[in-house]
Structures are given as C-alpha cells and as structure tokens.
Amino acid sequence: MYREKGFNMAGKGIKNELAEKLSEAIKKLSGTYGDFEMPTIILENPKDKGHGDFASNAAMVLAGKLKKKPREIATAITETFKCDLVEKTEIAGPGFINFFLTPTAWHTVIKDVISEGEKFGSSDLGGGKRCNIEFVSANPTGPLHIGHGRGAVVGDVLANVLEFAGFNVTREYYVNDFGNQMDKLGKSLKYRYLESLGMECEFPEGGYPGDYLKEIAEELKAQNGKSLLASDDTFFSKTASVRILKIIQDDLQTFRVGFDIWSSETKLHESGEVAECVAFLRSKGIIYENDGALWLKSTDYGDEKDRVVIRQNGLPTYLASDISYHRDKYERKYDLVIDIWGADHHGYIPRMKSVIEAMGYDPSTFRVLLIQMVNLMRQGKPVAMGKREGEFVTMREVLDEVGVDACRYFFLERKSDAHLNFDLDLAREQSNKNPVYYVQYAHARIASVLRKAEEAGIDINDLKSADLSLLKNTAELEILKKINAFRDVVELMASSFEPHHLTFYLKELVSLFHSYYYDNPIVGEDRELTRARLLFVTIVKMVIARGLKLLNVLAPERM
Image (cartoon, rainbow, N blue to C red; front, top):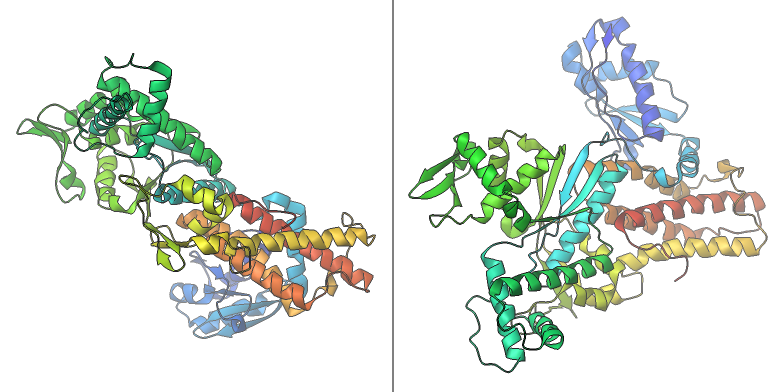
C-alpha cells in the first residue's frame, strides 16, 4: 500500500490540481513496487521554458525508496498519469518529469482571478499563527532618517504579505525612552531653551545638536516664557521625547505605516518587569554576579562572551530591558517573533537568540531581518548625508522630494540586507525608466482601455461569457503564466521573509503587458475577440492592483 506522507503543493489552482493528479499516479505505483512511503515531492516552474510549464523530481526522490532507476519510475508514473490540463509529459535528464500544459489550462487562471477577486494569490501558509513584527523602533531623540524609512517599508509590506498568507499579524513599535540617551536629550533641550531666552550656557557633552530641538525650545518659550527655568532635566527629557515621538508618528502616518502596539522601555522599568525578569533568570542560574555586576551566562548558548545586564553601579544595561521586552512578547503567546534591525546590530542576533533559549522559548521562532544603509544619489553622485551640523537627511525630506509611492517602491528594489543606492532623480521622473511609474502606468493604461471600451458601447461588466479560447497567442499565455505565479511569489515572500520579491514580480508582469499592448489591439473589429481581450486585461489590472496594495502603493486609474 501507498502511505501518504507529504507533497509540496504550495498554492492553489493549476498547480494544486496538477499535484493532485501526480499524487494519484504515484499511488498507483504500489501495485507494481509494493509498500512505500512517499517523501515530500516538489512541483516547480522550470527556469528553461523548453522543460515545460512544471517539473517534478518525484521519480528521483522515490528511486532510493524503491531501489529502481529514476527514469524507470518516471516512465511508470507518466503511463498512469492523467490530467486534462496537460498536453504532454516528457522525461528529462536523470528522471525529471516535465509537464506541458494546454492553452485551455491557462484560461482557468482568468476564472480564478475573477472568482477569487482580492483574495487571488492569498494562502493559508500561516494557518492563523500569531506573528509579531517589531520594526522602526527608532529612539525618540530625533526625526526618522532614510534608514528608518527603509526599515518601515520592509516591516509594513512584510506584515501585509504575512497577513495575505494566512498569519495573524501584530505590528509593534518599541520606544527606547529610557537611560542615558534620554538624559542627554533632556540636557540638550534645556540648553536650547536657555539659549532661546538669550542665556549663556555650555552645550552638554554628547548632546543632540540638531535644529529640531531648537524648534521645540522655541515652542516652549512661546508657551511658557521663563517659567520653566526651575524645571529639572527629567521634565525636558520627557517633553522632548513626547514631542519627537509625535513627529515620528506623523511622518509614519504620511508614509502609510501604522502600528497596532506602541511599547515603552520606560514602562517596562516602571512596572518592575525588568527587575522581575532579571531576578527570574538569576534564580535559574542564567544570570550570575561577578565583580559587583550581574552577567548573563550567554556563552552557554553560543554567544562569544558573557554580557553585563546590571552594571556595578546598579544601573541596568540596554540588554536588561531588551531581555524583558522579548520575554513579554513571548508571554503574549506569539508563534513567530520578527525583529527588524539596522545592519550594525548584526552581532546582537546570537546574543538575543541565546537569551530566548535561556528563558525556555524556542529560538527558531525568533527571526531578525537586517536593514542595510541607503545611499542617496543625485545626478549619479552621492548626496551628502548631513545638510546641517549635527543633522542628517530625514525621511520626511525624501518623502517631500519624491513622494510616498516612489519612496516605498524604491526601498524594496533590493533585498533588505543589501546596500541600496536611491536615485532621487529617477524617483521623480515620470517615464518608464522609473519602476514605480512603469508599474502604475500599466494599471492606468488598462483603466483607460476599459473606459474607451465603455464609450464604444461595450458592457465591461458583462464579460464573463467571453470566449477564452480566442486567447491563444504566445504573449497572452505568457502573461497568464505570470499571473498564475503570483500565488507562488506570495508564499515565497511569506516563507523567506523577503518582501522585495514583489517589486521584481510586478516589473516582470507589467513588462509583459506593455509589450503585449503595443502588438495586440484590445478593442478591434472582432467583437468576440475584443470581449475576450477586455476580460484578459481586466484580470491583469486586478493583479497589478493587488500587488500594489500589498506594497501600500497607489494604483491610479489615470496618469
């Protein structure tokens, strides 16, 4: 008897039906080869079009189990394989089975898109698992810079993708509003406040010299005059952090990035959670005392050295609150915890994994995505990152110059852990050289075609009865194949945590469409062919819109 174990059938539609038919053919092998248990078998799209539309390694995987040559097994499978979607099968190389589909098979993609609507491409990969994505989490000591902006887009789009793939996602921002940095921020704002009153004072060592504190100081002076002279540094640090956090929140809102939870490091300390967590780990022998300080025994979990959590002066390190914060996330029963950090925090990953394991949680459920630097370019040359002394190019400045859509799209033009050259001139350009314009224009172009069809008296809302058999040229079938691949792209992004694949996919799809548009009139004298092509471009438009929605980029009807 054939004993079911697994078959990799990511996605739905054509691929799923083909996988089911292949499974049925494999089960019939038990009559020839006897009892066996089938391991996971892959069904994938070959890179070489000459190898068919799909290929499977089934025969090679089974060869070791059945002690037979792969090509013999492949022959046995193809002799019993039956599927109306398949025009022919071929056995290639050591035993790959290649499947060549009929044009009619690809027409089912149109029906799938129409019937599934906005759910087309979605997946149950996540199975409702609870996922926490913490991203941006910039210190409230200054406005967001472009590096934060890239992290914001990666986190936001990844959250969208994971939700689309069946995860229950929580977006979280961790506000680092505790410790020495906040003391320096308070002293810096107090200096600016005194300066605004015309009083001479010395700028604090290691303070924040940015002009944004001057603006806050001027507001304090306008509202309070000299009445704040007796206020201590704590007042100024809290005032500054609250004002700056509001600036950050406003910028993120403009950038179409939202959060479900805003966590505070200060509240972790004030609630006693940090102290309780340290005491818990100390009781487990994971934290020990040495030279008057408390140390995390992280070398027991693969870290290169043990780490201080409470200094000799009794003050906690950042690691102490970070341990408590991650414990809190796991205590909230998330199945998957994702942190998005700057690339300079690379060495912090094994440390945090060791802490998670030490606390009794599964470190494999903790993932960190690193965000590499962004280099702004203008006329082919790097843009100076500091526009004024003590400052940097803010995310807001880039948004104001190139717009939200271009900024979001460009930040996903490369994998997050690779350096990104952001071409400001290209981002502003309204031509097909600009990738986001190129994608949006395809959507607007189809919208224009549909409007003109309506003006010509065609009911574009009554196209479901169109004769799809008329869609048979190579360009149409290639576009349908690319649309069908949208499901796989979603699952690839959700399983690899790499949302940049979506920008690549959209560019490939619209490139195929633009080429098709120039060579094939959509609205012509043949009424039935017109109706079929209008339905065809309608589903292209729907998939482009779905992809742009995952990116949180607008899909314009006119450009």
